[in-house]
Image (spheres, protein in one colour):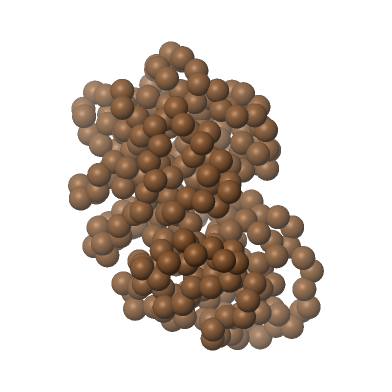
Amino acid sequence: MLAMVLDAPGSPLREADLLVPEPGPGQVRLRVRACGVCRTDLHIVDGELREPKLPLVLGHQIVGEEVETGERLGVPWLGWTDGDCRYCTSGRENLCDRALFTGYQLDGGYAEYAVADRRYCFPIPESYADVQAAPLLCAGLIGYRSLRLAGEAERLGLYGFGASAHIITQVARAQGRRVFAFTRAGDEAAQSLARELGAEWAGDALGPPPEELDAAIIFAPVGELVPVALRAVGKGATVVCAGIHMSDIPSFPYELLWEERVLRSVANLTRVDGKEFLALAPQVPVSTEVEEYPLEQANEALDRLRAGRVRGAAVLTVSA
Ligand SMILES: [Zn+2]
Ligand SMILES: [Zn+2]
């Protein structure tokens, strides 16, 4: 099968001809239809996440068809947990000490076929086409978990308006919240997409916010945004860092955290998050804005994402 393989961080993916993977016990074999490209994939390629399996097939937003049954399944980032550590047994499998992640420690979906543990796969809501569904599986899921952990905020700030923010804006609007989108200076494309999807304001992340916020989610991997977001929120507000990697956070005066402001991160997902979000998405309904690339052009898709030029989410399509 055709696969795009990472041999070492810092090098482009290589177009390879691999054996179709054999499913192990409890695993299904999927014919991949589409696979979303995530910011996390870039962190792996760029060597910012340090312990990938190598060589590695990236990709953890897989929409595929089970070869045996024809059932359409989604494969997310959480690929396996031990089920018996302190985290797993307290409803926090996202923090499992021995978790294995798709497209990081397990081969993922930048390929014509993939195998996955059936217990961690999700049925894909029928109303979504393959490419439209792919970004729901990480951008949507992790975004949804971040939104939940941001609390009951009415005025919600989103820092970085990519795949996650464009989905979460729609969910937040459906919940009656007001959305403020903060982007790189002069990023007209992201700002206009944000307004189209229901943000009432979109502007420069480093400029002053139009009014005080009740919560903020930082999707951009930029540590400088932490004090910026803390300064923008009111008393008791939560600032959520949604990414798996961020540049260093500059020091800031305690007064930015004082008055019960909360700064926290979000790590991974639980299967409960997936079930909840995939039930919610068609009800909103969330529609995803995608740029499609054939599998062979995975490097081009990653380069565009790195440059901040993707409108919405990038998705690889597999025609085999
Ligand atoms: Zn565990
Ligand atoms: Zn992801």
